[in-house]
Length: 343
Ligand SMILES: [Zn+2]
Ligand SMILES: [Zn+2]
Ligand SMILES: [Zn+2]
Image (cartoon, rainbow, N blue to C red; front, top):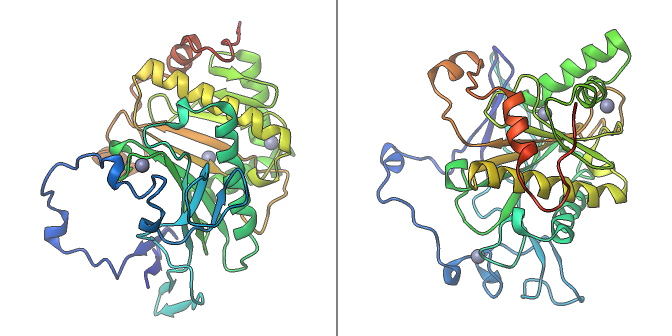
């Protein structure tokens, strides 16, 4: 069982994978990794036996689980960072805190087609992926051991994807991760001071100035944040206050699928199909409805390397001003959703 350990200075939790127990030689690359042929891909239809037994799947008709004919399939990660069975068992050793590495680690296989990418899928199928995220979050929230559920996507090898077949991941955690704590606390402080949600205020101001707006539809605003860490970092926010992703009303899933497809299409056009990471930041499990936190998607194309200065400081050097990044993305020629006019 993995170990969860808390840094006593900053309060950051880490997962120490005692089982994998990688030795020095395990970190020395042997051969450059080559993409797996569809015939060997564990995420392709017909090869369901290569994954752990499915947790959930969307099939056009009710069919036997673990067979083909699915459109989306959710399976436990074969190499989970955390283990779902067991009790939390919090312990202290002198000044150190630890607990068992309890958590869920799931893979959402977004399409049966080996070569499709999320950006190229029809909006309706992207919407189904978002529904699958929601269904899994709602199910895992029933487990009282979990405090936070993170959905994320690594696209492309440089962004950490080990398999080419389009997929995203979900990790349910028994702790609140430090980046989320920083956002929650910052948003709470702002709320205490102003009695307004900082994200709602950002949305109002960005719509007003327009220089960092990438796109917008009825329910969502896509923008380059004022102080992005990475070039072309982009956020998608629901325009009306909503603290938890999974509580969004049903019509929003269609518009979120449109916003997401639109952003990925623009990024592919401007940056030539970049590798990227995408995360959904939502409220903690125990506090799903509040006035200060506003769920959102953060999209981070992998264009630069994080090096000594950033690791040493948490202080990022971004070579692309967000106003420029927004302009490039806004002016990219994508079919659906013509770019918004801004003044
Ligand atoms: Zn495949
Ligand atoms: Zn808000
Ligand atoms: Zn965030």
